[in-house]
Length: 218
Image 1 (tube, one colour):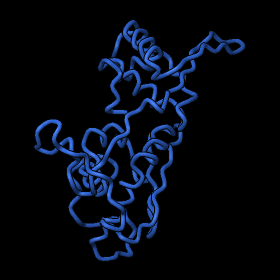
Image 2 (image 1 turned 180 degrees about the vertical axis):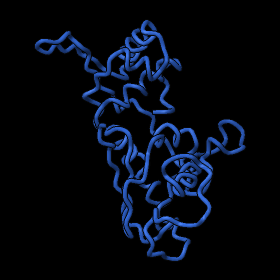
Image 3 (image 1 turned 30 degrees about the vertical axis):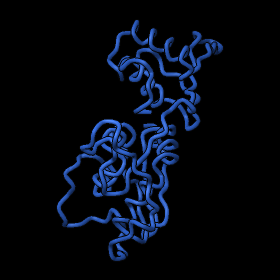
Image 4 (image 1 turned 90 degrees about the horizontal axis):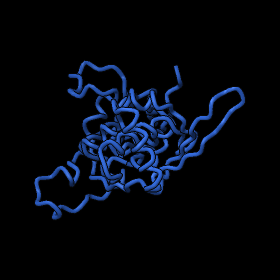
């Protein structure tokens, strides 16, 4: 979604705000304009214009729903087929768009099979077991996994999709990542699941699978 061209920064901000409130299929999305305003810091007039532009551009659709005893509200659906299909770079390498190469010359790196990233000796310790090793410099909730994953997929995509992500659970053979919404968990699993698994295996080769869950509402 980060590279999806919607026509304006304001439009993309509104689209990202809607994405944070829909389910894994892009549906059940009905945040109020005040909620979108708090997220995007845009005026209500601008939000209304951008929503209209997103509908006209087929990025989203919207229907007005009236529930008994309530004012009518808009229910939006994101057109997932309009989202940009991103290419990723191998684990530990800088994504193509961040390499120092002439514009248009750098070829996107294809995702490498997890088996090719197994370079470390096997470890039987849980992935997020407390250690006296120096903590990673990144302030995100993925700990030692954050830096290699950010280098693999690129800083922009990492910050857009893994912001607020945490390691909810880890065992000798699996890791569970918790993300802020069902939509984001589903999208991350579909688009970056292989990348996360590869980076986990580079840290601990006994990892066989990665699970993605949505954080429960407070």
